Length: 189
Image 1 (cartoon, one colour):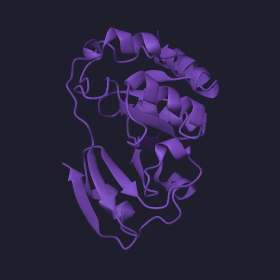
Image 2 (cartoon, helix red, strand yellow):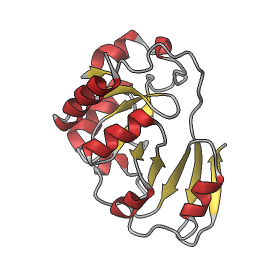
Image 3 (cartoon, helix red, strand yellow):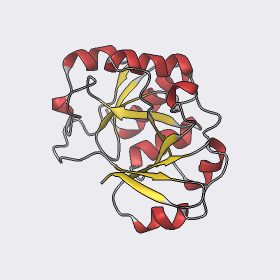
Image 4 (cartoon, one colour):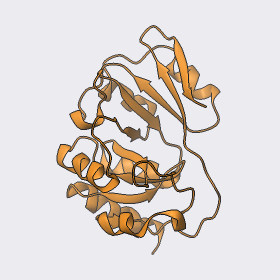
């Protein structure tokens, strides 16, 4: 299957409220429409994960941040420009997202993707998508497709073919908590 056909099928699945297994700019991920609570609940079931843990949301451009958080801290663009590895930032005061992706304290973890597949998928979908590692809760995240548990693959609505044969090991993103006043803390380096 080619890149365009994979995008189309993943897009149709997201639009129908389904779940996808897809390559991200970090590790293989489980995803769905981050604004659709029923779809997000499916992700928790697939992972056997407690809903008390929030999820990462992917967007395709920095300009979309203000749609999903009330105030974008002034330092955000400079912080993102200074980092070369994928970075997920935890922001205060999430909005317009499923409450199931937002932490109990109202924060949301958002990563702006640079990966071609994710960026095009999110851009065409027009909404953020969930990204959580494609593993059963408590197990290591898969660095390559072959490490994904067969039962997990069987429980999603669509499995992306793109990059299944890539063997480049990747790692999860850096996670930074950014406060409204511009102060930040590195949670995972």
